[in-house]
Image 1 (spheres, rainbow, N blue to C red):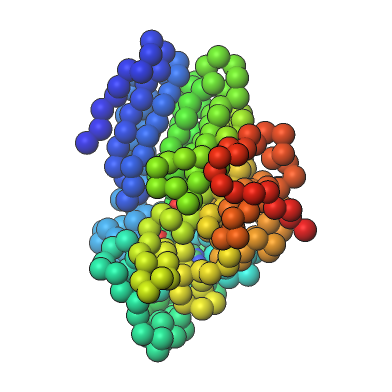
Image 2: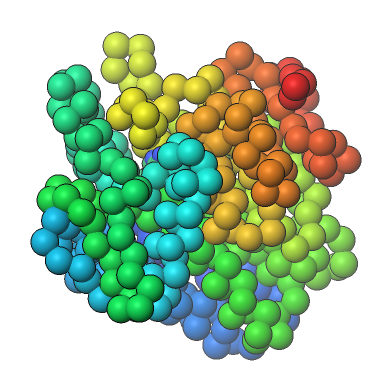
Length: 326
Ligand code: ADP
Ligand code: MG
Protein backbone atom coordinates (compact mmCIF):
# COMPACT_ATOMS: atom_id res chain seq x y z
CA UNK A 1 0.00 0.00 0.00
CA UNK A 2 1.27 3.45 -0.81
CA UNK A 3 0.01 6.89 -1.60
CA UNK A 4 1.25 10.35 -2.30
CA UNK A 5 0.78 12.82 0.51
CA UNK A 6 1.16 16.54 0.00
CA UNK A 7 3.28 17.88 2.88
CA UNK A 8 3.53 21.50 1.74
CA UNK A 9 2.83 23.23 -1.54
CA UNK A 10 6.00 21.95 -3.17
CA UNK A 11 6.59 18.77 -1.16
CA UNK A 12 5.40 15.31 -2.04
CA UNK A 13 5.82 12.44 0.36
CA UNK A 14 5.33 8.72 -0.20
CA UNK A 15 5.71 5.62 1.95
CA UNK A 16 5.78 2.02 0.78
CA UNK A 17 6.93 -1.45 1.79
CA UNK A 18 9.71 -3.11 -0.21
CA UNK A 19 13.07 -4.81 0.38
CA UNK A 20 11.63 -6.19 3.62
CA UNK A 21 11.32 -2.74 5.14
CA UNK A 22 9.45 0.56 5.22
CA UNK A 23 10.65 3.12 2.71
CA UNK A 24 9.87 6.79 2.44
CA UNK A 25 10.49 9.54 -0.07
CA UNK A 26 10.16 13.27 0.42
CA UNK A 27 10.46 15.16 -2.83
CA UNK A 28 10.50 18.91 -3.39
CA UNK A 29 9.54 20.52 -6.67
CA UNK A 30 8.82 17.16 -8.34
CA UNK A 31 6.18 16.29 -10.94
CA UNK A 32 3.42 14.19 -9.28
CA UNK A 33 4.24 10.98 -11.20
CA UNK A 34 7.87 10.84 -10.09
CA UNK A 35 7.28 9.36 -6.62
CA UNK A 36 5.26 6.51 -8.14
CA UNK A 37 8.03 5.83 -10.66
CA UNK A 38 10.58 5.66 -7.84
CA UNK A 39 8.41 3.22 -5.91
CA UNK A 40 7.95 1.03 -9.00
CA UNK A 41 11.71 1.02 -9.49
CA UNK A 42 12.34 -0.21 -5.93
CA UNK A 43 9.61 -2.86 -6.18
CA UNK A 44 11.18 -4.11 -9.42
CA UNK A 45 14.58 -4.42 -7.75
CA UNK A 46 13.01 -6.25 -4.82
CA UNK A 47 11.45 -8.80 -7.19
CA UNK A 48 14.79 -9.39 -8.86
CA UNK A 49 17.19 -9.29 -5.92
CA UNK A 50 15.40 -10.68 -2.87
CA UNK A 51 16.70 -14.06 -1.72
CA UNK A 52 13.26 -14.64 -0.13
CA UNK A 53 11.27 -14.47 -3.36
CA UNK A 54 11.33 -17.86 -5.11
CA UNK A 55 11.13 -16.25 -8.57
CA UNK A 56 14.00 -13.79 -8.07
CA UNK A 57 17.29 -14.13 -9.91
CA UNK A 58 19.08 -14.50 -6.60
CA UNK A 59 16.78 -17.35 -5.49
CA UNK A 60 17.44 -19.09 -8.83
CA UNK A 61 21.20 -18.85 -8.35
CA UNK A 62 20.84 -20.27 -4.83
CA UNK A 63 18.59 -23.14 -5.97
CA UNK A 64 21.07 -24.05 -8.71
CA UNK A 65 24.12 -24.06 -6.40
CA UNK A 66 26.37 -27.02 -7.15
CA UNK A 67 24.35 -27.87 -10.26
CA UNK A 68 24.47 -25.28 -13.01
CA UNK A 69 25.19 -21.64 -13.83
CA UNK A 70 22.20 -19.30 -14.10
CA UNK A 71 21.95 -16.54 -16.70
CA UNK A 72 21.07 -13.24 -14.99
CA UNK A 73 20.31 -9.70 -16.10
CA UNK A 74 23.18 -7.33 -16.70
CA UNK A 75 22.09 -5.36 -13.65
CA UNK A 76 22.14 -8.33 -11.25
CA UNK A 77 25.43 -9.49 -12.75
CA UNK A 78 27.01 -6.09 -12.16
CA UNK A 79 25.81 -5.92 -8.57
CA UNK A 80 27.04 -9.46 -7.81
CA UNK A 81 30.39 -8.59 -9.33
CA UNK A 82 30.80 -5.48 -7.21
CA UNK A 83 29.58 -7.35 -4.09
CA UNK A 84 32.16 -10.07 -4.70
CA UNK A 85 34.90 -7.49 -5.25
CA UNK A 86 33.88 -5.77 -2.01
CA UNK A 87 33.93 -9.11 -0.18
CA UNK A 88 37.55 -9.45 -1.24
CA UNK A 89 38.39 -5.82 -0.42
CA UNK A 90 36.99 -6.25 3.11
CA UNK A 91 39.06 -9.40 3.65
CA UNK A 92 35.84 -11.42 3.88
CA UNK A 93 34.28 -9.38 6.72
CA UNK A 94 31.56 -8.64 4.21
CA UNK A 95 30.82 -11.90 2.41
CA UNK A 96 28.24 -12.10 -0.34
CA UNK A 97 27.89 -15.87 0.29
CA UNK A 98 26.87 -15.49 3.96
CA UNK A 99 23.30 -16.69 3.33
CA UNK A 100 23.58 -20.26 4.72
CA UNK A 101 24.46 -18.67 8.08
CA UNK A 102 21.67 -16.09 7.75
CA UNK A 103 19.24 -18.99 7.25
CA UNK A 104 20.65 -21.06 10.09
CA UNK A 105 20.31 -18.22 12.60
CA UNK A 106 17.09 -16.87 11.08
CA UNK A 107 17.36 -13.68 13.14
CA UNK A 108 14.28 -11.57 12.66
CA UNK A 109 12.56 -14.37 10.73
CA UNK A 110 12.17 -17.30 13.07
CA UNK A 111 11.81 -17.83 16.81
CA UNK A 112 14.76 -16.89 19.00
CA UNK A 113 17.19 -19.72 18.55
CA UNK A 114 20.91 -20.28 19.14
CA UNK A 115 22.20 -23.07 16.89
CA UNK A 116 24.56 -25.72 18.23
CA UNK A 117 28.27 -25.02 17.72
CA UNK A 118 28.74 -28.01 15.40
CA UNK A 119 25.94 -26.75 13.15
CA UNK A 120 27.48 -23.28 13.01
CA UNK A 121 30.85 -24.82 12.10
CA UNK A 122 29.36 -27.05 9.43
CA UNK A 123 27.38 -24.18 7.89
CA UNK A 124 30.40 -21.90 8.01
CA UNK A 125 32.21 -24.25 5.61
CA UNK A 126 29.69 -23.25 2.93
CA UNK A 127 30.55 -19.56 3.22
CA UNK A 128 33.20 -18.41 0.77
CA UNK A 129 32.76 -15.63 -1.77
CA UNK A 130 35.52 -17.26 -3.88
CA UNK A 131 32.96 -19.94 -4.77
CA UNK A 132 30.74 -17.47 -6.61
CA UNK A 133 31.78 -17.88 -10.23
CA UNK A 134 30.75 -15.02 -12.49
CA UNK A 135 31.13 -15.60 -16.21
CA UNK A 136 31.57 -12.31 -18.04
CA UNK A 137 30.85 -13.66 -21.51
CA UNK A 138 27.65 -15.58 -20.72
CA UNK A 139 26.52 -13.31 -17.84
CA UNK A 140 25.97 -16.33 -15.61
CA UNK A 141 26.39 -16.77 -11.88
CA UNK A 142 27.27 -20.12 -10.32
CA UNK A 143 27.90 -21.26 -6.77
CA UNK A 144 30.31 -24.19 -6.73
CA UNK A 145 28.77 -26.30 -3.95
CA UNK A 146 25.25 -27.49 -3.11
CA UNK A 147 23.93 -25.64 -0.10
CA UNK A 148 25.79 -22.42 -0.87
CA UNK A 149 23.76 -19.24 -1.29
CA UNK A 150 24.23 -15.53 -1.86
CA UNK A 151 22.52 -12.72 0.06
CA UNK A 152 22.41 -9.09 -1.02
CA UNK A 153 20.83 -7.92 2.26
CA UNK A 154 23.95 -5.99 3.23
CA UNK A 155 24.15 -3.97 0.00
CA UNK A 156 20.81 -4.00 -1.90
CA UNK A 157 19.16 -1.08 -0.11
CA UNK A 158 22.16 1.10 -0.86
CA UNK A 159 22.12 0.07 -4.50
CA UNK A 160 18.38 0.77 -4.72
CA UNK A 161 18.82 4.18 -3.07
CA UNK A 162 21.48 5.13 -5.65
CA UNK A 163 19.08 4.15 -8.43
CA UNK A 164 16.27 6.21 -6.94
CA UNK A 165 18.64 9.18 -6.74
CA UNK A 166 19.50 8.79 -10.43
CA UNK A 167 15.83 8.59 -11.39
CA UNK A 168 15.01 11.73 -9.39
CA UNK A 169 17.97 13.68 -10.74
CA UNK A 170 17.04 12.76 -14.30
CA UNK A 171 13.48 13.94 -13.56
CA UNK A 172 14.89 17.32 -12.56
CA UNK A 173 14.39 16.95 -8.79
CA UNK A 174 17.03 18.97 -6.96
CA UNK A 175 15.93 18.51 -3.39
CA UNK A 176 14.80 15.24 -1.80
CA UNK A 177 15.19 12.89 1.13
CA UNK A 178 15.31 9.22 0.15
CA UNK A 179 14.95 6.73 2.99
CA UNK A 180 15.06 3.04 2.11
CA UNK A 181 14.77 1.30 5.46
CA UNK A 182 17.30 3.60 7.08
CA UNK A 183 19.59 3.91 4.05
CA UNK A 184 19.34 7.65 3.51
CA UNK A 185 20.27 9.90 0.64
CA UNK A 186 20.03 13.62 1.22
CA UNK A 187 19.73 14.87 -2.36
CA UNK A 188 20.89 18.43 -2.98
CA UNK A 189 20.10 20.87 -0.20
CA UNK A 190 16.89 21.52 1.68
CA UNK A 191 14.46 23.61 -0.39
CA UNK A 192 15.56 26.72 1.56
CA UNK A 193 19.15 26.15 0.38
CA UNK A 194 20.41 25.01 3.80
CA UNK A 195 22.13 21.64 4.30
CA UNK A 196 19.91 18.73 5.33
CA UNK A 197 20.01 17.80 9.01
CA UNK A 198 20.25 14.03 9.40
CA UNK A 199 20.04 12.39 12.83
CA UNK A 200 22.37 9.52 13.75
CA UNK A 201 20.26 7.15 15.80
CA UNK A 202 21.30 6.29 19.34
CA UNK A 203 21.60 2.46 19.36
CA UNK A 204 20.96 2.46 23.12
CA UNK A 205 17.60 4.18 22.82
CA UNK A 206 14.36 2.57 21.77
CA UNK A 207 12.69 5.94 21.37
CA UNK A 208 14.48 7.18 18.27
CA UNK A 209 16.81 9.58 20.08
CA UNK A 210 19.83 10.96 18.24
CA UNK A 211 23.51 10.63 19.04
CA UNK A 212 23.83 13.82 17.06
CA UNK A 213 22.90 15.62 13.89
CA UNK A 214 24.85 15.77 10.64
CA UNK A 215 24.62 18.77 8.31
CA UNK A 216 24.80 17.31 4.81
CA UNK A 217 24.43 18.23 1.15
CA UNK A 218 24.26 15.51 -1.49
CA UNK A 219 25.40 12.70 0.78
CA UNK A 220 24.27 9.25 1.83
CA UNK A 221 24.03 8.05 5.43
CA UNK A 222 23.88 4.32 6.17
CA UNK A 223 23.82 2.61 9.56
CA UNK A 224 24.51 -0.98 10.55
CA UNK A 225 23.68 -1.77 14.14
CA UNK A 226 23.08 -4.60 16.57
CA UNK A 227 19.79 -2.99 17.55
CA UNK A 228 18.07 -3.47 14.18
CA UNK A 229 17.06 -7.13 14.39
CA UNK A 230 18.06 -9.07 17.47
CA UNK A 231 17.04 -11.13 20.47
CA UNK A 232 18.63 -11.47 23.90
CA UNK A 233 19.23 -14.87 25.46
CA UNK A 234 21.12 -15.50 28.70
CA UNK A 235 22.31 -11.91 28.63
CA UNK A 236 23.82 -12.17 25.12
CA UNK A 237 22.51 -10.04 22.26
CA UNK A 238 22.18 -12.06 19.06
CA UNK A 239 21.78 -9.79 16.05
CA UNK A 240 21.63 -10.01 12.26
CA UNK A 241 25.16 -9.02 11.24
CA UNK A 242 27.16 -12.21 11.12
CA UNK A 243 30.90 -12.59 11.30
CA UNK A 244 31.93 -14.88 8.40
CA UNK A 245 35.03 -15.85 10.40
CA UNK A 246 33.13 -17.25 13.41
CA UNK A 247 29.70 -17.99 11.94
CA UNK A 248 27.97 -16.09 14.75
CA UNK A 249 26.71 -12.52 15.23
CA UNK A 250 29.70 -10.16 15.13
CA UNK A 251 31.12 -9.17 18.51
CA UNK A 252 33.54 -6.44 17.68
CA UNK A 253 32.85 -4.04 20.53
CA UNK A 254 30.53 -1.86 18.43
CA UNK A 255 26.85 -1.05 18.81
CA UNK A 256 26.53 0.74 15.48
CA UNK A 257 28.48 2.15 12.56
CA UNK A 258 27.08 5.02 10.51
CA UNK A 259 28.84 5.63 7.20
CA UNK A 260 28.59 8.94 5.35
CA UNK A 261 29.63 8.96 1.72
CA UNK A 262 28.62 9.53 -1.86
CA UNK A 263 27.68 6.05 -3.11
CA UNK A 264 24.93 4.50 -1.00
CA UNK A 265 25.78 1.02 -2.28
CA UNK A 266 29.34 1.39 -1.09
CA UNK A 267 28.31 2.98 2.23
CA UNK A 268 25.91 0.07 2.81
CA UNK A 269 28.58 -2.57 2.23
CA UNK A 270 31.11 -0.54 4.24
CA UNK A 271 28.81 -0.23 7.26
CA UNK A 272 28.21 -3.99 7.37
CA UNK A 273 31.92 -4.78 6.93
CA UNK A 274 33.05 -2.18 9.47
CA UNK A 275 30.57 -3.48 12.02
CA UNK A 276 32.18 -6.93 11.68
CA UNK A 277 35.75 -5.60 11.75
CA UNK A 278 35.39 -3.28 14.74
CA UNK A 279 36.58 0.25 15.35
CA UNK A 280 40.19 0.43 14.16
CA UNK A 281 40.06 -1.84 11.15
CA UNK A 282 36.57 -0.64 10.25
CA UNK A 283 37.68 3.00 10.30
CA UNK A 284 40.71 2.17 8.15
CA UNK A 285 38.50 0.46 5.56
CA UNK A 286 36.05 3.37 5.47
CA UNK A 287 38.76 6.00 5.14
CA UNK A 288 40.47 4.01 2.39
CA UNK A 289 37.27 4.50 0.40
CA UNK A 290 37.17 8.22 1.13
CA UNK A 291 34.05 7.92 3.31
CA UNK A 292 33.44 9.10 6.88
CA UNK A 293 31.83 7.40 9.88
CA UNK A 294 30.37 7.66 13.36
CA UNK A 295 31.05 4.63 15.57
CA UNK A 296 29.06 3.97 18.74
CA UNK A 297 31.07 1.54 20.84
CA UNK A 298 29.99 -0.74 23.66
CA UNK A 299 32.28 1.19 26.04
CA UNK A 300 29.86 4.13 25.79
CA UNK A 301 32.15 6.17 23.58
CA UNK A 302 31.46 7.80 20.25
CA UNK A 303 34.20 7.94 17.63
CA UNK A 304 34.15 10.21 14.56
CA UNK A 305 36.42 10.25 11.52
CA UNK A 306 38.19 13.56 10.97
CA UNK A 307 35.97 14.85 8.17
CA UNK A 308 32.89 14.95 10.41
CA UNK A 309 34.17 17.16 13.21
CA UNK A 310 32.67 20.36 11.79
CA UNK A 311 29.40 18.92 10.54
CA UNK A 312 28.38 16.67 13.45
CA UNK A 313 26.42 18.34 16.20
CA UNK A 314 26.61 16.21 19.35
CA UNK A 315 23.58 15.47 21.42
CA UNK A 316 25.28 15.72 24.80
CA UNK A 317 22.31 14.10 26.50
CA UNK A 318 22.82 10.82 24.56
CA UNK A 319 24.97 9.48 27.41
CA UNK A 320 27.99 8.84 25.17
CA UNK A 321 31.41 10.33 25.75
CA UNK A 322 33.95 11.22 23.10
CA UNK A 323 36.57 8.70 22.02
CA UNK A 324 39.66 9.17 19.85
CA UNK A 325 40.49 7.18 16.78
CA UNK A 326 44.16 6.11 16.62
P1 ADP B 1 20.37 -3.60 7.59
O1 ADP B 1 19.91 -4.60 6.57
O2 ADP B 1 19.71 -3.73 8.92
O3 ADP B 1 20.34 -2.22 7.07
P2 ADP B 1 23.11 -4.26 7.01
O4 ADP B 1 23.21 -3.40 5.81
O5 ADP B 1 24.32 -4.27 7.89
O6 ADP B 1 21.87 -3.92 7.91
O7 ADP B 1 22.84 -5.72 6.44
C1 ADP B 1 22.57 -6.81 7.24
C2 ADP B 1 22.08 -7.92 6.33
O8 ADP B 1 23.16 -8.31 5.46
C3 ADP B 1 21.68 -9.18 7.07
O9 ADP B 1 20.30 -9.19 7.34
C4 ADP B 1 22.09 -10.28 6.12
O10 ADP B 1 21.09 -10.46 5.13
C5 ADP B 1 23.32 -9.72 5.45
N1 ADP B 1 24.57 -9.98 6.18
C6 ADP B 1 24.76 -10.30 7.49
N2 ADP B 1 26.07 -10.43 7.78
C7 ADP B 1 26.74 -10.18 6.62
C8 ADP B 1 28.12 -10.17 6.26
N3 ADP B 1 29.08 -10.41 7.14
N4 ADP B 1 28.41 -9.89 4.96
C9 ADP B 1 27.46 -9.65 4.05
N5 ADP B 1 26.15 -9.62 4.32
C10 ADP B 1 25.79 -9.89 5.59
MG1 MG C 1 24.93 -2.80 4.87
